[in-house]
Length: 219
Image (cartoon, rainbow, N blue to C red; front, side, top):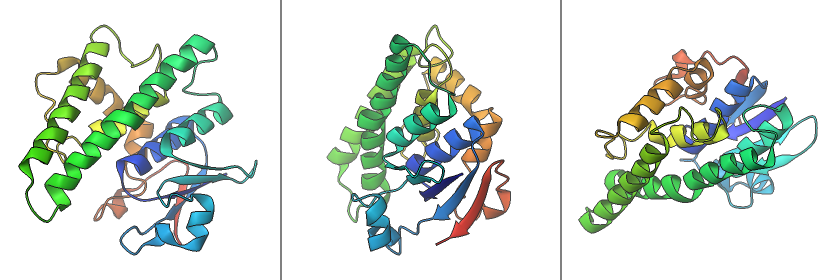
């Protein structure tokens, strides 16, 4: 059993999507970011950086933070969504790192300046929206002759999709990127993805949660 400490954000959802796709039983512990649960002493013992998500593997006693590292750990433990050969594993890793170092930070900054900054700073908005769109075009080129980012469906697809699915919230268009749109639709159609994006639920969507492996508790 995996304990997942998380909140409804792209980084949180990528782990619940991964757990659902790998069919790993887990229990969700909701972290209230608005109330500062991520800064409590107990949470900081699990992640000194004070960020979600975090997992605790009850069987091994291992605690892992950083969403990309969590997906890699779960794939290693389950033997799923990660190739066995060295070249294939690093193909997955580079596209996982692409999301962690590029799309996540850039799109996150776009959302911050568009949605939450107290004043409109148009140069900053333009900078982050344009850079996020540029990163989308990298994925577009990668997907022109393939179904997945690596050779087969992997944690790299899950990680990138978790951010791409909220492109409208960041006001970053995907129009004119047909390969990317096709790839997004194939990910959206996967049952595990559909369950995982509701764990934890966005406000007002708690009644929609029908996760295969999850139970949700409030801590």
